[in-house]
Length: 515
Image (cartoon, rainbow, N blue to C red; front, side, top):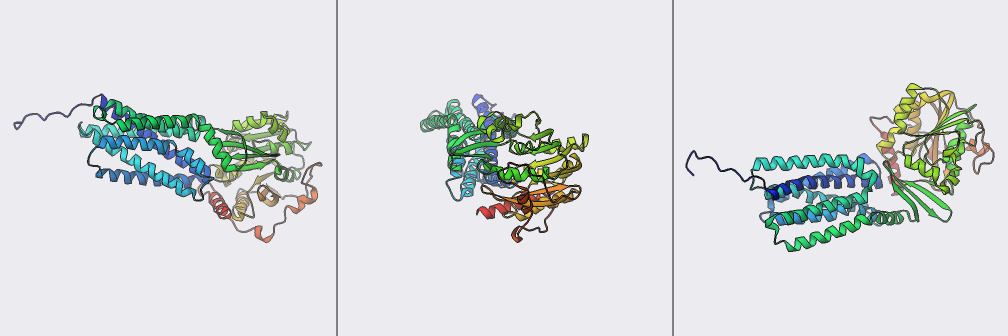
């Protein structure tokens, strides 16, 4: 070429190149979905969502970096390796949620399996984009890199929106994993069909078809796999399981023992739940002069409401629970309405499905002083989304809802297993301007369990306890307030929105107790 002649242009993108660029979008979406699946599943099974998301995402990104670095040692046959990587990711990523659910009750060191899988998937995902860029190197380099990275980032955005808004509520974790494994396998097969250079890849084509069929079978059998894993985990027959927008609801039954689990955590056993709920409700209502208007925050199973409605003075009961699927289940299922005595459909009941934190702040600001008694019955603070419901900010909002002379009670975890967490609840209520009295009760399914009464003024000693209860009497009520030395009051921090010390105290105590 003579000096001054124009430079020959690079070939423009063809149909095969367009297919490869489209695959960048799909593999990026799949890669982020696997990352979100592993983080969510670790949070679901191990608790403390911030720790699990941070460690899983950090491990995943590190593994991606290692995979990208190792791609430099690929000197030839990039297309064949890219297809094999896609099929490996399809298998590992697609089956990851199902495998981890199955392994959780079976292996002693579950975190080794979790992080080993995260490292494997991350490493393979890290290989994808460098290989794809090298396959497309016959085209203009700047345009190729720009296009691949654009599709990569757009795919990440799509995944981050699809996962919480569509996939988790409607498909669940196991089915979502298989679906995106199918997409990864489909990318590999599409490349095999589209690119002339892949015409002779007979082994890869057969493998791709087998992987696609296997993942499709897994997708179809997702519910059965989830049920099998849950039966293995709980050790009891699962009679109902559902993933809602907010949580996994599982009911088990063995003989006469009906149990509710939310996100794998036991909420009640029908054999002894009356001990918990009588102790939760009657000490607070029995110390309020005239509890006509009562509020329950949480308690979507209707069991606390059942006890509230035993007080003839109660004229109106409001229950605020986030999950409408939970309240529907306990409003319409015969064996559950037998347990809660139809409390959720009682004529005195107003049932609201709303976020308790937001509802309390908005209602306290617009309509303060409505409730003579407030019962706060949220799940334990296993992560920061629940931990905000135990903060000073939240308790100040709830305090505004109390009528003059009103009183509230908060379920507050075990003062024996987690004494610092328990007394942190008391310290936080006091920081919100309330006086407190702690008490505890033995519930066989949970062990020693604690509650905290709170009011703007002094809390009376005696309480009116309705007759006919299975556990609580006025004499037993008095004994609940005695704490032996191993559960006695100790200095404890205040749980605020910006520190969430309660979540860490709770996780540390229970991890030591459970070994």
